[in-house]
Length: 283
Image 1 (cartoon, helix red, strand yellow):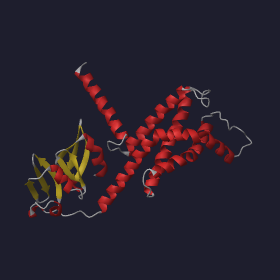
Image 2 (cartoon, rainbow, N blue to C red; image 1 turned 90 degrees about the vertical axis):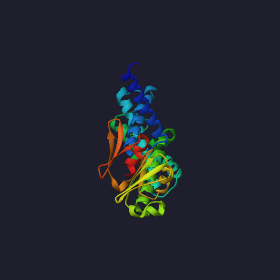
Image 3 (cartoon, rainbow, N blue to C red; image 1 turned 60 degrees about the horizontal axis):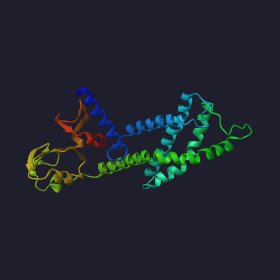
Image 4 (tube, rainbow, N blue to C red; image 1 turned 45 degrees about the horizontal axis):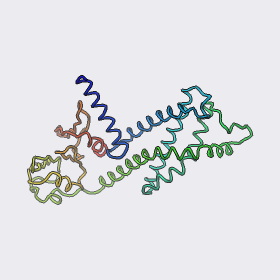
């Protein structure tokens, strides 16, 4: 195997591992990633369901059948996530928002299922001209109630990740609203002439270097202890050796195969791959 092929294989494995870590809650996830995962899940699920040739879509062309099941899966994922998120915002604690979402899913999905059947001209058991819209809805609800439970089981992890995003945003908002402490109140060893406008912290072996708008100081302190002491500041660890205060961050972006945080004084700080998403969300 050539070096290029080896590098591509390694990159592919890293991406696959990153997706698994994100989906199962071991790494931060963004709304954009969550929507992407829902799309992929719906496409793959649509293809798999169509391959079993269910009676509902068996007479249809393959692409129409796939589109039919994709639409159902994507709408179901969206409804489950949205209902869970609304439950979190309303003040419910997990898992009750998800329980409510599972119960409400067939009621929310039924109208979309009816519209999809009409648009795609899917033959259904409810094609009776004598039935009014309410009766059709009740019949459709009965048709999808049990399948929706199966969909809920498959998509619960996506709803949990959505709830995690909302809860972290709520925690960040509360943190931003809370007054920040003085530097010496959390790190008593900091010199008086440093002031309180902390910019960043850098690890240097068994020491830490504090950088403020008034100067710098090196203290004999473990970096992990320093980061823990700064928890009430609106900042975060971006690398195993660096902590930054968000008010001084100008940009956080990818630079080649690495990630870089640029401060307002144009200082560039490395950002580790696993901390990039959280830092991007909070800064």
